[in-house]
Image 1 (cartoon, rainbow, N blue to C red):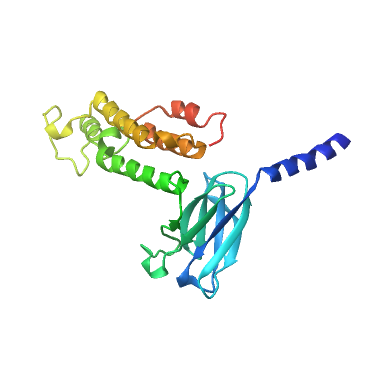
Image 2: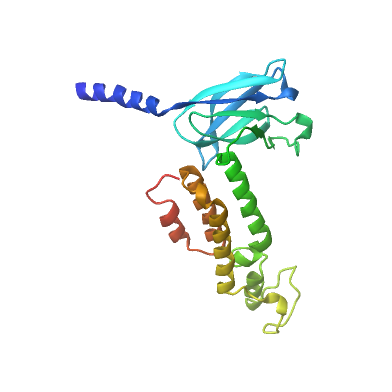
Length: 249
């Protein structure tokens, strides 16, 4: 028992020693007199959040939040229901401008998401890297989603073919006799799908390869590629073994 009593405080102090101070400061001119809060995710699957620290925005519209974190993570910076994503790393300081309330893209009953302006960021900062990668990913999906996701997406040509051959004709499909040729019902060849996906991976490696030594960003890219694996028809059992089984997400 005495050994356990000795070990527990040692482990606690060890965890504290791994933590480092993060400072998030800047201006939020439209929100004077309100509290700005920094939240971390307690559970990424459910979206449950925990409060790291808050600060009152002064009459000059400035604030400074100081807290301790033990690992690089995605956080949410929020003023009431207006919030933005900020990726923070232990030991770093982030200087931001919080956009005026009236310029928020869309007012909702629950939450309004905005994009922060973060100053003095180095080229390898996570916030820049992830925004750039997300832009590449979104562009790829916008251009090729219907080709790579043919087996998953219910509006795809492959789905239409299966429906027609099963004797069912959804409202958006012209009624034709089964077996009648229709050039609009071509299924994307597996080789074409592979070319598209491999081409995207090659572009990612060319543009971001030198930054993949950053563990968090490397994992972010890896799990983003898992989305492509999922919609392109990869076995869910394979996905589970590759991305979830016996590992931290």
